[in-house]
Length: 131
Image (tube, one colour):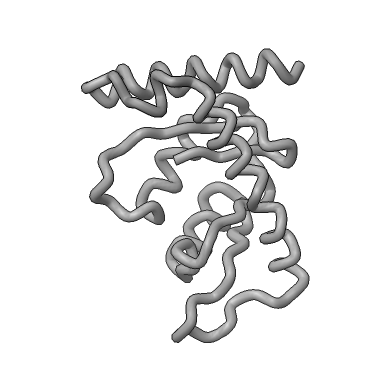
């Protein structure tokens, strides 16, 4: 899981197994931030539409969660906040940049700690290229 800024540059990355839902990994990812500053808004897809996550992020981190409502759920956000959802492609661009590193695509690393180190190294290279 990764958090990117408005330019698509990495702010935080976290590696976990495939079994837990992404909503449960949001706080762990924010805790592993590269910088001291956190974003004001966090943009996610429909899976992140949760009242529990919204209140936890707002109270603990001071971050507003922007996610479209799931199909069988009442609307939780108005259209003004959802305009930010159009910028979600920037985090996808970060994942595309990480796909340029063969070691991350093939996942030669067996242990999660080693793989996280390679992801962080890839993020460092991306940040250095965009300075």
